[in-house]
Length: 246
Image (cartoon, rainbow, N blue to C red; front, side):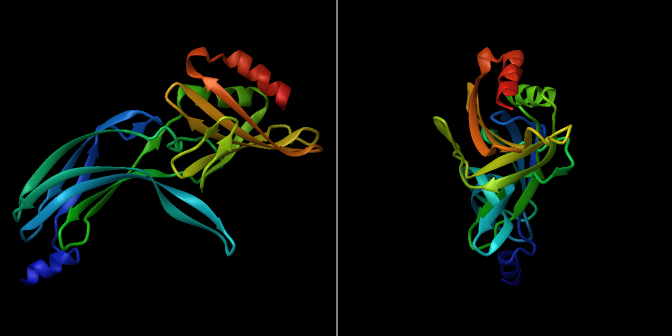
């Protein structure tokens, strides 16, 4: 009885470990994992497993700004099983990352973007055992093309963060509850042109929407959105279009 009481507060309870085939993924990419469950010191009934895609996002309130964990996506595996002391269980899992997963593999001065898979056991009368696996999220081809065109226009990536909320552009809206902002600055200082560009991607299966917030030296702030069709992606034409805007 004493061991069951300890297990109910997480001492000597079952442990979970999600082992990903790879931790380097793109937004929208399928992935595979093995969920390894190791029993604790007492018999425990497990009603299922929950995995969540989580990021750290900035939140603005009337009291100021703070950060909090935002669940972008979740998966539930119903797996009623009674674990005996010392028993191990391996559960295969396949999923697809949300298309709007923030990029973490960024070369910039201030990168505040973090994404991970959190795994918890739904254990009757006990605290959830939990496991966190950081992900290395790399940009898609469309994102690379847009960033490359922007760099060719004389801008470099200065900082990146994730904001809680939704984005709306011309004919699109984000869905996962948080969005990434990539802040670009001009190599030359931007005294007479655009001083700062904040870029946010809202990808879909066959196209990627891009929302720009422009901080111009004399014309003030402005918003502009693009839609990149993946099959018709033309980096040269994209760069030309950006130069006209900037």
